[in-house]
Image 1: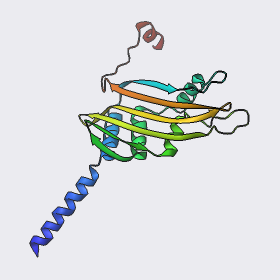
Image 2 (image 1 turned 90 degrees about the vertical axis):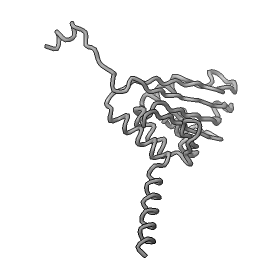
Image 3 (image 1 turned 180 degrees about the horizontal axis):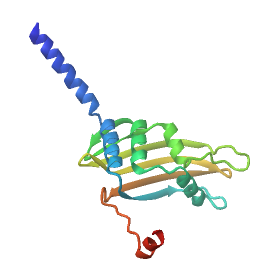
Image 4 (image 1 turned 120 degrees about the horizontal axis):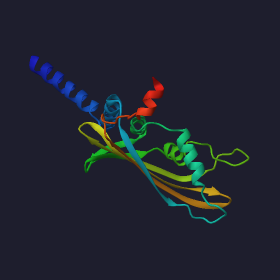
Length: 188
């Protein structure tokens, strides 16, 4: 009886422990650890694919950049949010990756805005798909990548859209602000 109770308790603790160590929890903990460090720098690069479909002007990247800036999130906050939304995160080849729901893909492809023209109607994105991949180093987020694909109708033309955004985090805990001497003098 005591052996069965002890074995059951041990098994319960082991299962609870392994559930807490899921890939999703690992990414969220790594993002929190990055936030707790206080400062870091990062480089975000985006590669666009598609954009075809003809028409005058095609896809307006300036509009997209404006939407991205107005909906800015720190890399740590965005990574934690993406990990929360991702489905079936799995660890393989040194990274944690998974798919994002269609609603999240649409949100990422609309650059956080409603889109639409003078009528105020949102542009319809069809075939929206997205995935996310995270890299951790020493238990801290070091890089993540978001890939989106789908199409949108613009001026009665179907435009294939695709984007891969990579965010690389560096200089964690070492980023310093240097104030020029003349600026220091003005502050005193």
